[in-house]
Amino acid sequence: MLDDAEAAEHVELGGAVSLAFALETDALAPLTAAGFLPRSACLAERATLAWRGTGCYADAMDTFERVGVQTLWLAVGGLVVLSCGGEVAKDVLASSGGTVSIDAGEATPRTDQWDDAGVSGQAGDAGVSGQCAVAPGDAGGDVPCTETCAGACSAGGCMVTLATEATPYVVLVDAENVYWTDAAGTIVKEAKAGGTPTTIYSQWGESLQNVAVDGDAIYWTNEQPGSIMKLSVSGGAATTLTTTSPAAGTLTSLAAFGGMVFWTNSNSVMSVPESGSAVATVATGMDSPTGVMADDTYAYWASGVASTGKIMRALRGGGAVTTLAKGQDDPLGIALDASYVYWTALGSTRTATGTIVKQPIAGGTPTTLATGQGFPWGIAVSATGVYWANSLTGTVMRSPPCGGAPETLASGQTAALNIAADASGVYWTTESTVMGLKPSCACR
Image (cartoon, rainbow, N blue to C red; front, side):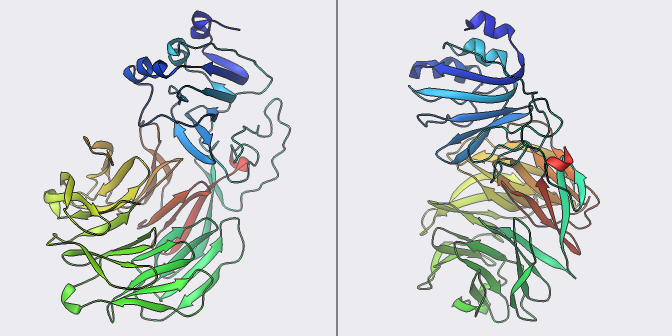
């Protein structure tokens, strides 16, 4: 058993660590003031944290939350258990005000980038149990790596070409599959676990550039004639949810979430139930709205061009419009998680002047995650970070969820545009390919 002073000296442990903190609610105050609790605290009664060289994950009620190596998520009035090899932030230990017990095992701490929340708990990944597996070659590793990388190792993951297409447009993910569309009016899906791509829809001439997946269906905008379409993820016949007026102009973006489909046209944000019914106006009188996204409460979108750009939102059913941020230089893509709204700003000069920005959904001051980006187009967020594609410079980038300098995951990706990410990996389109970068112990 170590007291606080001893814990402060015990900065790194060359083994598996088990720390039990018995904390009262008021123990949160000094840590919050010291900056050790970004965003929000994990309020689960118990949580399991898997520590690694650049962060850790909390497995609470089957939800992974990424936090920094110098950050501790505390259970209010409860017990938090930390279990795994890795670094221990001495300031957190010294400031915890709790009782710390340390049991050092034989495992070697890991520091690689992709020691992340996996879906199967395979070697080297923190799986759904939140436990840390040890990769081959590490002392104490009892699960050998049987993976091979069919592509090229990059940034600690395996980068593979999912498809070669004439002009791929959009890439999407859901719980089971990766989907993409192309200029030929085709929708293709492939299991995230691997397998043979399957074409689930093909209609020459359809512009499948605004596409979303939610639940058991895929949705897209069809310009000629203007309409919102729906298709089962299993394939079959497509149905028309609603038609749009030519006077509304080009349909510029689409999102589907929580039983509703949202889209933007030249000056409005619209919605329709996923079952098809009466169309509603969420907001009108907007300046070239695009990038629409939605959560349980609001619809969000970018509006305006050049330095007049704004990030805006309104209730899903419509109502007063709130400006979350203004003075954005040509904002385009939007992504959401439970705490933040994220967006890309292209930079009006169409050079490497783009930015990646986030802001609390509850309101507050925007934070710039990256500057000097080469025309950042698509953006995605998952527990493993914020991802975007720079179409001008052909790079795929990641901002660690705990902050820090942006990381280049892949380069040489000509005209990288759209991007999607979840615990299984990150996926993007180039001018002629659909790519994926997945965690793999074979690339560590």
